[in-house]
Length: 77
Image (cartoon, rainbow, N blue to C red; front, side, top):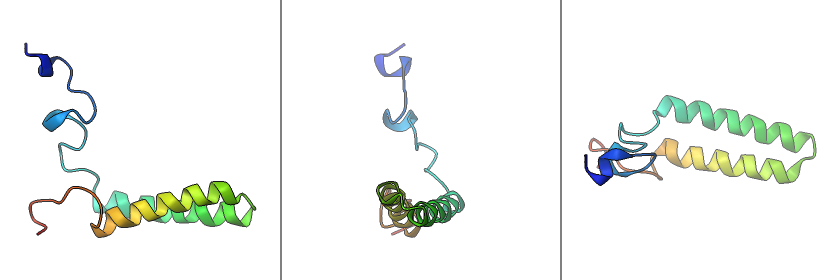
């Protein structure tokens, strides 16, 4: 058993997390909508620091959803 085959772990080369292609567009869309809803709820409650963190998550999921961030798939040129 080679050194790398003993423990692949998360993000450890081709056997690590994301080896199957990463999250689906459906998952990213749900995560985007959910984080935007959390942002609005927290802002309405006056928790602006927490709302800013949720807004950053919404921006991240939006960038992943449109394909501006993350690993490019073979079918995307």
